[in-house]
Length: 489
RNA sequence: GCGCGUAUUGUCUAGUGGAAGGACGGCUGACUUUCUAUCAGCAGGCCAGAGUUCGAUUCUCUGUACGCGUACCA
Image 1 (cartoon, chains in turn orange, green):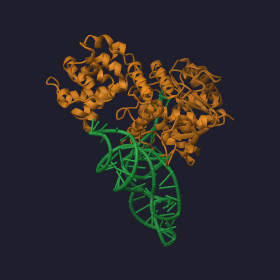
Image 2 (image 1 turned 45 degrees about the vertical axis):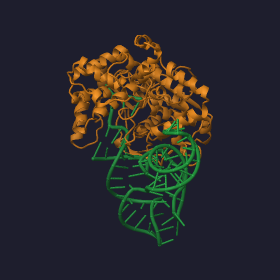
Image 3 (image 1 turned 180 degrees about the vertical axis):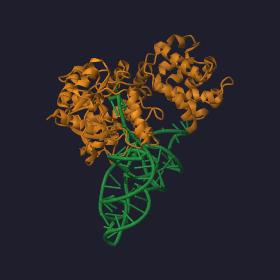
Image 4 (image 1 turned 60 degrees about the vertical axis):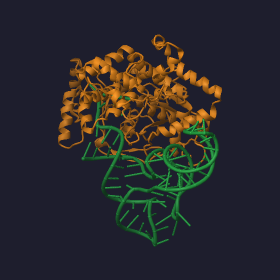
Protein backbone atom coordinates (compact mmCIF):
# COMPACT_ATOMS: atom_id res chain seq x y z
CA UNK A 1 0.00 0.00 0.00
CA UNK A 2 1.31 3.42 -0.92
CA UNK A 3 1.89 5.77 1.96
CA UNK A 4 -0.14 8.91 1.51
CA UNK A 5 0.02 11.87 3.86
CA UNK A 6 -1.58 15.26 3.73
CA UNK A 7 -1.49 18.75 5.09
CA UNK A 8 -4.88 20.36 5.51
CA UNK A 9 -4.43 24.02 6.25
CA UNK A 10 -7.44 26.18 6.79
CA UNK A 11 -7.15 29.42 4.87
CA UNK A 12 -7.81 31.75 7.76
CA UNK A 13 -5.15 34.34 8.33
CA UNK A 14 -1.45 34.27 7.63
CA UNK A 15 0.16 30.92 6.89
CA UNK A 16 1.66 29.86 10.19
CA UNK A 17 5.08 28.44 10.92
CA UNK A 18 3.32 25.59 12.73
CA UNK A 19 1.65 24.65 9.47
CA UNK A 20 5.07 24.58 7.83
CA UNK A 21 6.32 22.28 10.56
CA UNK A 22 3.44 19.82 10.29
CA UNK A 23 3.58 20.00 6.49
CA UNK A 24 7.29 19.24 6.55
CA UNK A 25 6.80 16.18 8.73
CA UNK A 26 4.08 14.89 6.43
CA UNK A 27 6.25 15.63 3.42
CA UNK A 28 9.29 13.87 4.83
CA UNK A 29 7.31 10.87 5.98
CA UNK A 30 5.75 10.38 2.58
CA UNK A 31 9.04 10.81 0.76
CA UNK A 32 10.84 8.49 3.13
CA UNK A 33 8.32 5.80 2.27
CA UNK A 34 8.19 6.52 -1.45
CA UNK A 35 4.69 7.77 -0.95
CA UNK A 36 2.67 10.81 -1.84
CA UNK A 37 2.01 14.09 -0.14
CA UNK A 38 -1.32 15.82 -0.64
CA UNK A 39 -2.37 19.40 -0.07
CA UNK A 40 -5.99 19.90 0.85
CA UNK A 41 -7.57 23.24 1.63
CA UNK A 42 -9.90 22.95 4.60
CA UNK A 43 -12.15 25.92 4.04
CA UNK A 44 -15.27 24.76 5.82
CA UNK A 45 -15.38 27.88 7.95
CA UNK A 46 -17.18 30.21 5.60
CA UNK A 47 -16.90 33.20 7.88
CA UNK A 48 -13.14 33.13 8.28
CA UNK A 49 -11.83 31.55 5.10
CA UNK A 50 -10.45 33.78 2.40
CA UNK A 51 -9.00 33.34 -1.03
CA UNK A 52 -6.21 35.68 -0.16
CA UNK A 53 -5.15 33.40 2.65
CA UNK A 54 -5.37 30.31 0.48
CA UNK A 55 -3.08 31.90 -2.08
CA UNK A 56 -0.64 32.81 0.68
CA UNK A 57 -0.58 29.21 1.90
CA UNK A 58 0.30 27.83 -1.50
CA UNK A 59 2.91 30.53 -1.90
CA UNK A 60 4.53 29.80 1.44
CA UNK A 61 4.64 26.06 1.09
CA UNK A 62 6.02 26.38 -2.38
CA UNK A 63 8.64 28.83 -1.17
CA UNK A 64 9.72 26.25 1.38
CA UNK A 65 10.12 23.72 -1.39
CA UNK A 66 7.56 21.26 -0.06
CA UNK A 67 6.10 20.06 -3.30
CA UNK A 68 2.79 18.24 -3.17
CA UNK A 69 1.72 15.49 -5.53
CA UNK A 70 -1.93 16.44 -5.47
CA UNK A 71 -3.58 19.69 -4.56
CA UNK A 72 -6.06 22.37 -5.55
CA UNK A 73 -3.68 23.91 -8.07
CA UNK A 74 -2.30 20.79 -9.72
CA UNK A 75 -5.25 18.44 -9.34
CA UNK A 76 -5.01 14.68 -8.93
CA UNK A 77 -7.17 11.57 -8.96
CA UNK A 78 -8.86 12.26 -5.66
CA UNK A 79 -10.08 15.81 -6.16
CA UNK A 80 -11.38 18.32 -5.71
CA UNK A 81 -8.86 19.37 -3.10
CA UNK A 82 -10.82 22.24 -1.68
CA UNK A 83 -13.43 21.19 0.85
CA UNK A 84 -15.84 23.91 -0.20
CA UNK A 85 -16.00 22.14 -3.57
CA UNK A 86 -16.85 18.78 -2.03
CA UNK A 87 -20.12 19.69 -0.36
CA UNK A 88 -22.09 17.12 -2.34
CA UNK A 89 -19.80 14.41 -1.10
CA UNK A 90 -20.34 15.42 2.51
CA UNK A 91 -24.10 15.65 2.04
CA UNK A 92 -24.12 12.16 0.64
CA UNK A 93 -22.17 10.85 3.59
CA UNK A 94 -24.14 12.63 6.23
CA UNK A 95 -27.37 11.17 4.90
CA UNK A 96 -25.76 7.77 5.08
CA UNK A 97 -25.11 8.32 8.78
CA UNK A 98 -28.63 9.63 9.25
CA UNK A 99 -30.07 6.54 7.58
CA UNK A 100 -28.05 4.21 9.73
CA UNK A 101 -29.09 6.12 12.84
CA UNK A 102 -25.58 7.23 13.71
CA UNK A 103 -26.47 10.89 13.50
CA UNK A 104 -29.48 13.06 14.28
CA UNK A 105 -30.98 16.44 13.57
CA UNK A 106 -30.61 19.02 16.29
CA UNK A 107 -32.76 22.13 16.37
CA UNK A 108 -31.39 23.64 19.55
CA UNK A 109 -30.72 27.34 19.35
CA UNK A 110 -27.31 28.78 20.18
CA UNK A 111 -28.97 30.50 23.14
CA UNK A 112 -30.27 27.26 24.53
CA UNK A 113 -26.88 25.65 24.15
CA UNK A 114 -25.21 28.57 25.84
CA UNK A 115 -27.60 28.38 28.79
CA UNK A 116 -27.20 24.65 29.01
CA UNK A 117 -23.43 24.97 29.15
CA UNK A 118 -23.32 27.73 31.70
CA UNK A 119 -25.66 25.76 33.90
CA UNK A 120 -23.46 22.72 33.57
CA UNK A 121 -20.46 24.82 34.46
CA UNK A 122 -22.25 26.19 37.50
CA UNK A 123 -22.99 22.66 38.61
CA UNK A 124 -19.34 21.77 38.04
CA UNK A 125 -20.32 19.33 35.37
CA UNK A 126 -18.53 18.82 32.10
CA UNK A 127 -20.05 20.84 29.33
CA UNK A 128 -21.63 18.53 26.86
CA UNK A 129 -24.70 18.44 24.65
CA UNK A 130 -27.57 17.12 26.75
CA UNK A 131 -29.17 15.07 24.00
CA UNK A 132 -32.34 17.11 23.94
CA UNK A 133 -33.07 16.53 20.25
CA UNK A 134 -32.28 12.86 20.52
CA UNK A 135 -35.81 12.51 21.83
CA UNK A 136 -37.37 13.85 18.65
CA UNK A 137 -39.09 11.22 16.57
CA UNK A 138 -39.24 11.14 12.80
CA UNK A 139 -42.44 13.14 12.69
CA UNK A 140 -41.07 15.91 14.89
CA UNK A 141 -38.02 16.17 12.71
CA UNK A 142 -40.06 16.23 9.56
CA UNK A 143 -42.32 18.92 10.93
CA UNK A 144 -39.39 21.06 12.03
CA UNK A 145 -37.73 20.66 8.67
CA UNK A 146 -40.91 21.71 6.92
CA UNK A 147 -41.06 24.74 9.14
CA UNK A 148 -37.56 25.51 7.86
CA UNK A 149 -36.19 25.68 11.37
CA UNK A 150 -32.41 26.01 11.32
CA UNK A 151 -30.70 22.80 12.36
CA UNK A 152 -27.40 21.05 12.66
CA UNK A 153 -26.62 17.37 12.46
CA UNK A 154 -24.83 15.78 15.37
CA UNK A 155 -23.20 12.42 15.71
CA UNK A 156 -24.39 9.88 18.23
CA UNK A 157 -21.85 8.69 20.74
CA UNK A 158 -21.85 5.53 22.87
CA UNK A 159 -22.92 6.09 26.46
CA UNK A 160 -20.35 3.85 28.05
CA UNK A 161 -17.13 2.09 27.33
CA UNK A 162 -13.84 3.61 26.33
CA UNK A 163 -12.22 4.55 23.09
CA UNK A 164 -8.68 3.44 22.61
CA UNK A 165 -6.44 5.76 20.66
CA UNK A 166 -3.37 4.32 19.05
CA UNK A 167 -0.61 6.66 18.11
CA UNK A 168 2.61 6.06 16.24
CA UNK A 169 4.62 7.90 18.88
CA UNK A 170 2.81 7.15 22.11
CA UNK A 171 1.41 4.33 24.17
CA UNK A 172 -2.26 3.76 23.47
CA UNK A 173 -4.44 6.05 25.55
CA UNK A 174 -8.06 5.74 26.53
CA UNK A 175 -10.88 8.21 26.70
CA UNK A 176 -14.31 7.22 27.98
CA UNK A 177 -17.10 7.71 25.53
CA UNK A 178 -19.06 9.39 28.29
CA UNK A 179 -16.66 12.31 28.00
CA UNK A 180 -17.03 12.65 24.25
CA UNK A 181 -19.54 15.23 23.07
CA UNK A 182 -22.19 14.65 20.41
CA UNK A 183 -20.19 16.64 17.94
CA UNK A 184 -21.85 18.73 15.29
CA UNK A 185 -20.99 17.20 11.93
CA UNK A 186 -23.04 19.44 9.72
CA UNK A 187 -23.52 23.12 10.42
CA UNK A 188 -26.68 25.08 9.82
CA UNK A 189 -25.04 26.81 6.87
CA UNK A 190 -24.88 23.49 5.05
CA UNK A 191 -21.16 23.09 5.53
CA UNK A 192 -19.58 20.14 7.31
CA UNK A 193 -17.42 20.65 10.36
CA UNK A 194 -13.76 19.70 10.35
CA UNK A 195 -14.49 16.35 11.93
CA UNK A 196 -16.78 15.06 9.22
CA UNK A 197 -14.95 16.59 6.28
CA UNK A 198 -11.62 15.42 7.56
CA UNK A 199 -12.64 11.80 8.00
CA UNK A 200 -14.53 11.59 4.74
CA UNK A 201 -11.71 13.20 2.80
CA UNK A 202 -8.94 11.22 4.39
CA UNK A 203 -10.76 8.04 3.49
CA UNK A 204 -11.67 9.07 -0.03
CA UNK A 205 -8.22 10.45 -0.65
CA UNK A 206 -6.71 7.22 0.65
CA UNK A 207 -4.66 8.90 3.33
CA UNK A 208 -2.76 6.20 5.19
CA UNK A 209 -1.09 8.27 7.90
CA UNK A 210 -2.65 11.22 9.64
CA UNK A 211 0.22 13.29 10.99
CA UNK A 212 -1.11 16.35 12.74
CA UNK A 213 -0.68 18.56 15.79
CA UNK A 214 -1.44 17.20 19.22
CA UNK A 215 -4.31 19.63 19.65
CA UNK A 216 -6.31 16.95 17.85
CA UNK A 217 -5.72 14.13 20.30
CA UNK A 218 -8.87 14.86 22.23
CA UNK A 219 -11.13 14.77 19.22
CA UNK A 220 -9.61 11.63 17.80
CA UNK A 221 -12.31 9.43 19.38
CA UNK A 222 -14.88 11.27 17.28
CA UNK A 223 -12.88 10.51 14.19
CA UNK A 224 -12.37 6.88 15.12
CA UNK A 225 -16.08 6.56 15.72
CA UNK A 226 -16.84 8.03 12.32
CA UNK A 227 -14.54 5.52 10.65
CA UNK A 228 -16.48 2.80 12.45
CA UNK A 229 -19.85 4.23 11.49
CA UNK A 230 -18.84 4.32 7.87
CA UNK A 231 -17.24 0.90 8.10
CA UNK A 232 -13.89 2.21 6.97
CA UNK A 233 -10.44 1.27 8.07
CA UNK A 234 -8.89 4.00 10.14
CA UNK A 235 -5.51 5.45 9.21
CA UNK A 236 -2.49 5.51 11.49
CA UNK A 237 -2.52 8.52 13.76
CA UNK A 238 0.52 10.47 14.74
CA UNK A 239 0.19 13.51 16.96
CA UNK A 240 3.10 15.90 16.95
CA UNK A 241 3.90 18.26 19.82
CA UNK A 242 3.09 21.91 19.23
CA UNK A 243 5.76 24.55 18.76
CA UNK A 244 6.15 26.89 21.74
CA UNK A 245 7.06 30.45 22.57
CA UNK A 246 10.20 30.99 24.66
CA UNK A 247 7.96 31.02 27.74
CA UNK A 248 6.63 27.58 26.77
CA UNK A 249 3.17 28.78 25.89
CA UNK A 250 1.83 27.76 22.51
CA UNK A 251 3.57 29.63 19.72
CA UNK A 252 1.58 32.79 19.10
CA UNK A 253 1.82 35.89 17.00
CA UNK A 254 1.37 38.03 20.03
CA UNK A 255 4.72 36.89 21.40
CA UNK A 256 6.69 35.76 18.39
CA UNK A 257 6.74 36.29 14.67
CA UNK A 258 4.95 33.23 13.31
CA UNK A 259 4.10 34.06 9.72
CA UNK A 260 5.99 31.94 7.19
CA UNK A 261 6.12 34.88 4.85
CA UNK A 262 7.55 37.06 7.58
CA UNK A 263 10.62 34.86 7.59
CA UNK A 264 10.89 35.15 3.86
CA UNK A 265 10.55 38.92 4.02
CA UNK A 266 13.17 39.15 6.73
CA UNK A 267 15.67 37.37 4.53
CA UNK A 268 15.64 33.89 6.00
CA UNK A 269 16.41 31.23 3.45
CA UNK A 270 13.83 28.52 2.91
CA UNK A 271 16.47 25.81 3.17
CA UNK A 272 17.51 27.16 6.58
CA UNK A 273 13.95 27.27 7.84
CA UNK A 274 13.25 23.76 6.61
CA UNK A 275 16.50 22.51 8.10
CA UNK A 276 15.67 24.13 11.41
CA UNK A 277 12.17 22.67 11.60
CA UNK A 278 13.39 19.25 10.58
CA UNK A 279 15.89 19.26 13.43
CA UNK A 280 13.01 18.61 15.80
CA UNK A 281 12.51 15.21 14.23
CA UNK A 282 16.09 14.38 13.55
CA UNK A 283 17.65 13.82 16.93
CA UNK A 284 21.12 14.18 15.53
CA UNK A 285 23.01 13.82 18.73
CA UNK A 286 26.38 14.50 17.25
CA UNK A 287 27.82 15.97 14.09
CA UNK A 288 26.66 18.46 11.54
CA UNK A 289 23.21 19.90 11.98
CA UNK A 290 23.22 21.81 8.73
CA UNK A 291 21.66 19.45 6.25
CA UNK A 292 19.98 19.75 2.91
CA UNK A 293 16.50 18.37 2.40
CA UNK A 294 17.97 15.26 0.77
CA UNK A 295 20.33 14.70 3.65
CA UNK A 296 17.56 15.30 6.14
CA UNK A 297 15.53 12.65 4.42
CA UNK A 298 18.29 10.08 4.83
CA UNK A 299 18.17 10.14 8.61
CA UNK A 300 14.54 11.09 9.00
CA UNK A 301 12.46 8.94 11.28
CA UNK A 302 9.23 10.11 12.80
CA UNK A 303 9.99 7.93 15.80
CA UNK A 304 12.88 10.19 16.70
CA UNK A 305 10.64 13.08 17.42
CA UNK A 306 10.73 14.32 20.99
CA UNK A 307 7.35 14.59 22.60
CA UNK A 308 8.06 17.66 24.70
CA UNK A 309 6.81 20.85 23.03
CA UNK A 310 9.87 22.43 21.46
CA UNK A 311 10.53 26.12 21.85
CA UNK A 312 10.93 27.89 18.56
CA UNK A 313 14.44 29.17 19.14
CA UNK A 314 15.00 31.96 16.68
CA UNK A 315 18.68 32.33 17.64
CA UNK A 316 19.47 28.89 16.41
CA UNK A 317 17.51 29.50 13.25
CA UNK A 318 19.59 32.63 12.65
CA UNK A 319 22.77 30.68 13.18
CA UNK A 320 21.67 28.08 10.63
CA UNK A 321 20.68 30.80 8.21
CA UNK A 322 24.08 32.43 8.54
CA UNK A 323 25.72 29.09 7.90
CA UNK A 324 23.81 28.75 4.62
CA UNK A 325 24.73 32.27 3.63
CA UNK A 326 28.41 31.75 4.38
CA UNK A 327 28.84 28.20 3.20
CA UNK A 328 26.62 27.94 0.17
CA UNK A 329 26.86 31.33 -1.46
CA UNK A 330 29.74 32.76 -3.44
CA UNK A 331 30.16 36.51 -3.15
CA UNK A 332 28.46 36.92 -6.51
CA UNK A 333 25.60 34.67 -5.65
CA UNK A 334 25.21 36.44 -2.35
CA UNK A 335 24.90 39.84 -4.00
CA UNK A 336 22.46 38.53 -6.54
CA UNK A 337 20.32 36.90 -3.89
CA UNK A 338 20.42 40.05 -1.80
CA UNK A 339 19.27 42.19 -4.71
CA UNK A 340 16.49 39.80 -5.49
CA UNK A 341 15.40 39.79 -1.92
CA UNK A 342 15.45 43.56 -1.54
CA UNK A 343 13.90 44.52 -4.82
CA UNK A 344 11.87 41.59 -5.98
CA UNK A 345 10.42 40.24 -2.78
CA UNK A 346 7.83 42.94 -3.12
CA UNK A 347 7.28 45.63 -5.60
CA UNK A 348 9.24 48.63 -4.40
CA UNK A 349 7.83 50.52 -7.37
CA UNK A 350 4.69 51.12 -5.38
CA UNK A 351 6.84 53.52 -3.36
CA UNK A 352 9.09 54.68 -6.18
CA UNK A 353 7.58 58.10 -6.78
CA UNK A 354 7.40 58.75 -3.07
CA UNK A 355 11.08 58.00 -2.71
CA UNK A 356 11.95 59.91 -5.84
CA UNK A 357 10.24 63.08 -4.69
CA UNK A 358 12.26 63.03 -1.50
CA UNK A 359 15.60 62.47 -3.22
CA UNK A 360 18.07 65.25 -3.90
CA UNK A 361 20.93 62.91 -4.66
CA UNK A 362 20.92 59.10 -4.81
CA UNK A 363 22.88 58.93 -1.59
CA UNK A 364 19.76 60.14 0.20
CA UNK A 365 17.89 57.00 -0.69
CA UNK A 366 19.51 54.38 1.50
CA UNK A 367 18.86 56.14 4.81
CA UNK A 368 15.36 57.00 3.67
CA UNK A 369 14.35 53.45 2.80
CA UNK A 370 16.41 51.69 5.46
CA UNK A 371 13.43 51.01 7.68
CA UNK A 372 11.66 49.17 4.87
CA UNK A 373 14.38 46.54 4.79
CA UNK A 374 15.34 46.23 8.42
CA UNK A 375 14.19 43.62 10.88
CA UNK A 376 14.47 46.06 13.74
CA UNK A 377 14.70 49.80 13.96
CA UNK A 378 15.77 51.91 16.86
CA UNK A 379 13.07 53.83 18.64
CA UNK A 380 13.34 55.85 21.78
CA UNK A 381 10.80 56.66 24.38
CA UNK A 382 11.08 60.38 23.82
CA UNK A 383 10.49 60.01 20.10
CA UNK A 384 7.43 57.88 20.60
CA UNK A 385 5.78 59.98 23.25
CA UNK A 386 3.97 63.16 22.38
CA UNK A 387 2.56 65.99 24.44
CA UNK A 388 -0.77 65.63 22.77
CA UNK A 389 -1.34 62.00 23.64
CA UNK A 390 -1.52 60.53 27.08
CA UNK A 391 1.16 57.89 27.52
CA UNK A 392 -1.19 55.27 28.81
CA UNK A 393 -3.60 55.82 25.95
CA UNK A 394 -0.78 55.56 23.46
CA UNK A 395 0.29 52.26 24.98
CA UNK A 396 -3.28 51.11 24.81
CA UNK A 397 -3.50 52.18 21.20
CA UNK A 398 -0.43 50.13 20.30
CA UNK A 399 -1.72 47.20 22.27
CA UNK A 400 -5.13 46.98 20.67
CA UNK A 401 -3.65 47.61 17.26
CA UNK A 402 -1.25 44.71 17.70
CA UNK A 403 -4.08 42.49 18.87
CA UNK A 404 -6.38 43.52 16.10
CA UNK A 405 -3.90 42.95 13.30
CA UNK A 406 -4.53 39.27 13.93
CA UNK A 407 -8.09 39.66 12.88
CA UNK A 408 -7.83 41.58 9.66
CA UNK A 409 -7.25 39.55 6.61
CA UNK A 410 -6.48 41.95 3.82
CA UNK A 411 -3.75 44.50 4.18
CA UNK A 412 -4.47 47.18 1.62
CA UNK A 413 -3.32 50.76 1.83
CA UNK A 414 -6.79 52.16 2.35
CA UNK A 415 -7.65 49.27 4.64
CA UNK A 416 -4.68 50.09 6.84
CA UNK A 417 -5.76 53.70 7.21
CA UNK A 418 -9.28 52.71 8.05
CA UNK A 419 -7.98 50.15 10.51
CA UNK A 420 -5.84 52.67 12.36
CA UNK A 421 -8.58 55.29 12.37
CA UNK A 422 -11.00 52.81 13.88
CA UNK A 423 -8.59 51.92 16.63
CA UNK A 424 -8.00 55.59 17.39
CA UNK A 425 -11.73 56.22 17.46
CA UNK A 426 -12.21 53.35 19.85
CA UNK A 427 -10.01 55.15 22.36
CA UNK A 428 -11.42 58.52 21.40
CA UNK A 429 -8.02 59.69 20.26
CA UNK A 430 -7.45 62.40 17.71
CA UNK A 431 -5.99 60.60 14.73
CA UNK A 432 -3.80 63.53 13.67
CA UNK A 433 -2.22 63.75 17.08
CA UNK A 434 -1.50 60.07 16.99
CA UNK A 435 0.22 60.00 13.63
CA UNK A 436 3.69 61.16 14.70
CA UNK A 437 3.96 58.36 17.24
CA UNK A 438 2.93 55.76 14.69
CA UNK A 439 5.51 57.17 12.29
CA UNK A 440 8.19 56.68 14.88
CA UNK A 441 7.03 53.17 15.69
CA UNK A 442 7.02 52.08 12.06
CA UNK A 443 9.80 54.10 10.46
CA UNK A 444 11.95 55.19 13.37
CA UNK A 445 11.44 58.85 12.43
CA UNK A 446 8.77 61.46 12.80
CA UNK A 447 9.01 62.25 9.11
CA UNK A 448 9.38 59.60 6.49
CA UNK A 449 7.72 57.97 3.52
CA UNK A 450 3.92 57.88 3.58
CA UNK A 451 2.85 55.81 6.52
CA UNK A 452 0.12 53.58 5.14
CA UNK A 453 2.10 52.80 2.01
CA UNK A 454 5.10 51.95 4.12
CA UNK A 455 3.07 49.69 6.37
CA UNK A 456 1.69 48.03 3.31
CA UNK A 457 5.17 47.49 1.93
CA UNK A 458 6.66 45.99 5.07
CA UNK A 459 3.59 43.85 5.55
CA UNK A 460 1.37 42.96 8.43
CA UNK A 461 3.84 40.70 10.21
CA UNK A 462 6.66 43.21 10.34
CA UNK A 463 4.23 45.97 11.22
CA UNK A 464 3.15 43.93 14.19
CA UNK A 465 6.77 43.41 15.24
CA UNK A 466 7.46 47.14 15.02
CA UNK A 467 4.41 47.96 17.10
CA UNK A 468 5.41 45.37 19.67
CA UNK A 469 8.83 46.94 19.85
CA UNK A 470 7.33 50.40 20.28
CA UNK A 471 4.99 49.18 22.99
CA UNK A 472 7.86 47.54 24.83
CA UNK A 473 9.80 50.79 24.63
CA UNK A 474 7.11 52.84 26.33
CA UNK A 475 6.03 50.05 28.61
CA UNK A 476 4.35 46.70 28.10
CA UNK A 477 0.96 46.38 29.73
CA UNK A 478 0.64 44.90 33.17
CA UNK A 479 -1.56 41.87 33.62
CA UNK A 480 -4.37 44.06 34.83
CA UNK A 481 -4.09 46.39 31.87
CA UNK A 482 -4.00 43.47 29.48
CA UNK A 483 -7.23 42.14 30.88
CA UNK A 484 -8.96 45.49 30.62
CA UNK A 485 -7.61 46.24 27.18
CA UNK A 486 -8.45 42.82 25.81
CA UNK A 487 -12.08 43.61 26.43
CA UNK A 488 -11.84 46.57 24.12
CA UNK A 489 -10.03 44.79 21.37
C1' G B 1 -13.38 21.90 37.23
C1' C B 2 -12.93 17.48 34.17
C1' G B 3 -10.24 14.65 30.35
C1' C B 4 -5.68 13.81 27.55
C1' G B 5 -0.55 14.60 26.89
C1' U B 6 4.51 15.99 28.22
C1' A B 7 8.86 16.64 31.67
C1' U B 8 17.52 15.71 30.65
C1' U B 9 21.60 22.80 31.36
C1' G B 10 18.68 29.34 29.20
C1' U B 11 17.05 26.62 24.31
C1' C B 12 17.04 22.08 20.76
C1' U B 13 18.34 17.28 21.98
C1' A B 14 21.48 12.11 22.74
C1' G B 15 21.70 8.42 26.32
C1' U B 16 21.84 4.95 30.55
C1' G B 17 19.99 0.41 36.67
C1' G B 18 26.85 1.93 37.98
C1' A B 19 31.00 8.89 37.26
C1' A B 20 25.01 12.37 31.60
C1' G B 21 27.25 13.43 25.39
C1' G B 22 26.46 17.01 21.18
C1' A B 23 24.43 21.72 19.06
C1' C B 24 22.63 26.98 19.67
C1' G B 25 23.20 30.82 23.18
C1' G B 26 26.53 32.81 27.30
C1' C B 27 31.56 33.68 29.22
C1' U B 28 37.25 33.63 28.58
C1' G B 29 41.45 33.51 25.37
C1' A B 30 43.98 33.37 20.32
C1' C B 31 43.67 35.53 15.41
C1' U B 32 41.74 40.19 13.21
C1' U B 33 42.86 47.90 12.82
C1' U B 34 37.48 47.00 14.74
C1' C B 35 33.25 43.91 14.47
C1' U B 36 31.89 39.16 12.36
C1' A B 37 33.71 34.40 11.03
C1' U B 38 37.32 30.79 12.69
C1' C B 39 40.14 28.15 16.47
C1' A B 40 40.98 26.86 21.77
C1' G B 41 38.83 26.66 26.49
C1' C B 42 35.09 27.53 30.69
C1' A B 43 30.41 27.59 33.19
C1' G B 44 25.61 25.33 33.31
C1' G B 45 21.31 19.90 33.58
C1' C B 46 18.37 14.55 34.66
C1' C B 47 10.82 18.73 37.85
C1' A B 48 9.86 17.16 43.32
C1' G B 49 8.90 13.45 47.05
C1' A B 50 8.30 8.44 48.42
C1' G B 51 9.08 3.27 47.09
C1' U B 52 11.93 -1.02 44.66
C1' U B 53 17.42 -1.78 44.55
C1' C B 54 23.97 -2.74 46.94
C1' G B 55 23.05 1.47 43.71
C1' A B 56 17.83 5.32 40.26
C1' U B 57 18.12 10.60 35.91
C1' U B 58 16.59 5.63 34.07
C1' C B 59 11.62 1.16 37.05
C1' U B 60 6.77 2.06 40.23
C1' C B 61 3.54 5.40 42.78
C1' U B 62 2.14 10.29 44.29
C1' G B 63 2.61 15.31 43.58
C1' U B 64 4.02 19.72 40.80
C1' A B 65 4.63 22.50 36.43
C1' C B 66 3.60 23.28 31.45
C1' G B 67 0.65 22.31 27.08
C1' C B 68 -3.82 20.75 24.54
C1' G B 69 -9.08 19.83 24.58
C1' U B 70 -13.80 20.80 26.73
C1' A B 71 -17.44 25.53 19.70
C1' C B 72 -22.57 25.40 14.32
C1' C B 73 -13.09 27.17 14.60
C1' A B 74 -9.91 24.35 12.45
